[in-house]
Amino acid sequence: MPRMLIGLRSRKHISPFELVRPASLEAACRALSALGRNVAMAGGIDLIDRLKLGEAVDRVIHLSGVRELSGIRRDGDTVSIGALTTHAEVISNPLLAEVLPDLPAIWRGVANPRVRHTGTIGGNLMSAMPHYDAAPALLALGASLVKAGTLLERVRIPIAPHQRLLAERSLHPIISVYLGARLEGGKIHSARIAVGCCHAQPATADLPLAGVSVTSLGADAAAIASKAAASFAEPLSDGLASGSYRRRMIEVLTRRLLIKLGSQP
Image (tube, rainbow, N blue to C red; front, side, top):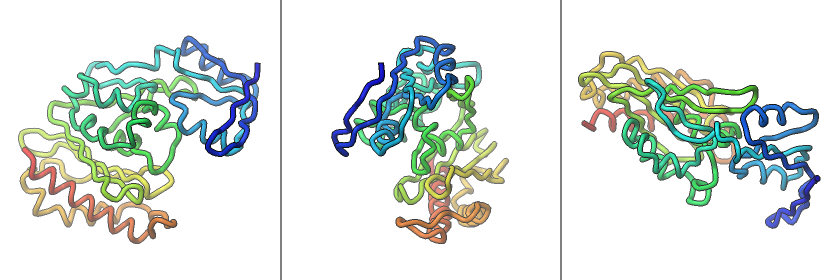
């Protein structure tokens, strides 16, 4: 039976919808593909806000009972994170602490406790909000998405013995920059930056650093950062900052991250 909710903050009625609670991935995909305007709900943070603003849907597919979307596990040379994994679970997961400790360390500073305990990695990605952190962080790590139809199932992150993820969020939500790097024998095997908040979707740039000594990054950081910043499309201008300022900050924050990477053992 359709339900009606009242958004207490806005005092607006949320249009009636049918609430569907599938117990399997197959059932969830089937519900989403049914006729009508159907939306998936994980933590619900963004969806509830959209409903309060007047978005009308026929069915809300609540995914909490779909076990295939939960859990963090190791799959060969990747870590697989279920779409329903909350930000708090990323922070506290022992496997991530072992194989990719930079990710949970950074995630302790993302959002606030309410969002971290309710919001999910899948919801953060599928909302596609330019200022959210999951997409640029995962892009910097070279992650890939596993989908079942239109539904995000899991995120797979390739892992290596000496893998780093560094973040510069000091100017968020104007800009955020993530640096992912693989190190071998004191040298860089590969490196990539991902920039959030500057474009409609996060943008990436692979840095030409293969074979470069980590300890030499400080001396070369300014030149590397300048070339990387110039490679991006024109950043957006809005009420927070101009596109030219954002481009300049891509360079500044990338330089900081390179110097930080070169100064750490």
